[in-house]
Structures are given as structure tokens and as C-alpha cells.
Length: 469
Ligand code: BG6
Image 1 (cartoon, rainbow, N blue to C red):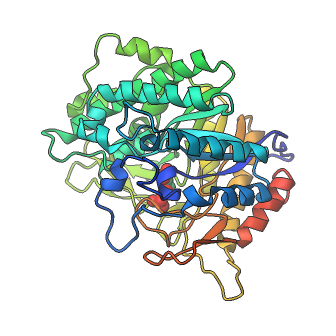
Image 2: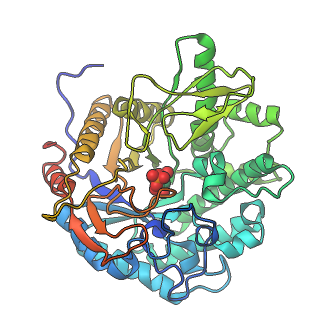
């Protein structure tokens, strides 16, 4: 739809940036922090691990000052569960509690709204040893952890996110460490874990509303529009299957407390349906989000499954191998360009995604990740000329404004990432930030912070409330 006049971004729009604990903090075993599954996983060869990352644990004051200089209204970060509970449950680590308390105070000092993700991929390793998300006791551990966060930070934190990209944890478990190959039926087990995470999320939402009536809480999956590979009706049906399995399973449960019927029929067909204990559906029905946070990097394209052994294929994100015999086959979108890392760039798909989510759930939306990974270069004159990043954001922010004009309620944009950090699999050379961190994969140098050109660009954009792009 073409609009002659675009709605302005709301005055209180939460312009900001996003990060996660294990990708930014470093200090992986300091001050009593327990190891997480990420710390003990085999990391990809040839790239750095997460032990030091951007050393934000020691440099957070400088980092927050830079975010404030950019004009951030909000900062979305995650709390490392094993910094608070080194064993996942049991004894609390006071130094861990203190770190996030200081960080929150530092943000509030500059009027930056903290948006806290409770769990971003880094399950405490001690819990994993006891079965991780396969063990229902992890649901209780998460509830206890949530309670501790509300007790300690609820006086200052108004925005809470439960689990980052639960759908990616389930759909790409090998890459994030949730897949236990030793299990007899790993795929079925994953959907059991998924069920437990959904219960944990519902419980955390209920508890938040009980303990902090003024706070708001929501899920944070990765959502992207799914295109059919052609206008063939069978391809459209395949796209619908994938949308149900990738996107709506997670949001239908978070919002309505029920399994999406297409996703459920897929689980039954494959024999992956989880065991639902008595009382589970009541718990799931009690958790209601106040908003939906979602991460968007790209769209996906799929076609009809041919069931010929070749349904699995790379799609919009070269990282993702997509396909499901009998349901859909991965495909590429010939209309889109890709990033240096092979991820399809689709700003218009962003608008469609915003519209689709809002039409389904009618809840306010916040974008908690969106961004461009690139090999940025620090020039001899001290500049980082990341025009490609500005171009990427320009196009995506334009689509938010169009979606706003379409009537979608969007209240914030926190792109990935506020500052350079270590990518999930492609090391520290794959950079996303507005602030450059001067380190290499295996040479930490001084971890100096440098303002990229996009830093100044984003500063102007925020000051003009999204007008000057
Ligand atoms: C999201 C994750 O999936 O994508 C982040 O929530 C991640 O943790 C981001 O860093 C970008 O992916 P990558 O693989 O380029 O780091």
C-alpha cells in the first residue's frame, strides 16, 4: 500500500540497541560466575571463544556513556543466568547480582530504559548436566531465577523479555548447544524441551504480573515472513507450514496458550509431540504477554517438499539449513541481495513481518534485533566507514515507519548490536555494532572503543526522532 503521508515515530519511541551477556561481557569465570553451556561447548575452529568477548564486564561504564552519547532511549541486554545462580539454582551469587544492579543504575543515570532478556542461549552448565530443558526441574529453576531478578531489579526494570529466540534454539539446536545427540530420539526430545521452555516462560510471565504490576513482559522469538518459492498453490501451502512451525507455534503459545494447530499436526505426524502433563495447559493459558518483542534479520523462502531426500537446503540466511520432508523445502529468493555473510537483505519483508504479527496478536511490538554483520575496517585515520550499515538501517527503519502508517503499533527499535561483540559462530570479525571494539580474533589488543560512522548517523537519527535518515 502506498501512503502519501507517513505517521511520525511516537515521541516516546524506544530507540536503542541490543546485546547479549555471553557475546559481550567476557569475565566468563569471574566473581563467582558458573559456566554456561556456551562456555563449555566446543566452539567453532578459527574464531575466538567467548571468554573475554568485548570485556564489557569491566568496561560497562564507558560503554553506557557511549550509548548515552548516541542518544539511546533504551538498551536491551541479557542477564547471564549462571552469574546470578552459578549452579542454575540453589545459592545466589551476590557479586553477579551486584554487577547487573550497577549496570542498571548506570543506564538509569543517563535516562536509558533497561530492557532485560532473562535467558539468551546461555543455560547454566550445571542445569545441563542434570538434563537441561529435558528435565522439568529446569522449569522451576527458571521460575526461581525470574523471581530473584524481579526481587532485585523490579524496582528499576520495567521491561522484561523471557527467552531469546526460543524458536532458533529448537530449529537449529546443533548450533546453539541444545541438541544432545546421545538421546534416542533427539528431535522428539527437542520438542519436549520446547514444551518445558514454554511452561517456564508462562510461569515467568504470571510471576512478573503478580510481583511487578507496573512492569511489562513479553517473548522474544526470531520472526520473519515466509514466502512461497512460486505462486504454485503447493508452494504457498509449504510456506504456510513453515510459518506455523517456525513462527506461530511460539507466538500462539505465548499469547493464546495453545499449540498452533498446523504445527501440532506436524509434531503428531513426525511423532515429535511432547508429553503434556496434567495442569500444563492451564499454566500455559495463564501466561499473557504485554507486548511482543521479535528479532528480524531476513525473510525465508520455501517450496513444496518433494520428499526426495533433498528438501534440506540453504535459505535466506546462509547459516540456516531449512527443509522438512513432507512439509517444505528450503529455497533461495532470487529477488534479494545478500550481505557479505550470505544473509538475504529484505527490508520490505520487515514491514510484512510487522504487519503479520500485529494482525495476528494485536499487541504492541518492539524490534529487539535487526542488523548487518560485516567485516568493518578501522582505517589508519581512526575512522570506520560503515556506510553499508547505515544503508541497511535506513531501509529497515523506513519500513517501520510504513508499518506504523499501516496501523501497526511499534514502540521501539533496538538493533543488533549496540556495540561490537562476538558473533554466535563467526567470531569477533563479524561486526554488527555502532561502536567498534578494537580487537582481533586472537589478539585482544586494548579493546579500545571507536565511534563508527554509523554511530554519528544513528545519533542524528535518534535526535530527529527518526526523521533524518
Ligand atoms: C540472533 C541472536 O539470532 O542473531 C544473536 O539472538 C546473534 O545472539 C544474532 O548474534 C546474529 O547472528 P550471528 O550468528 O551473526 O552472531
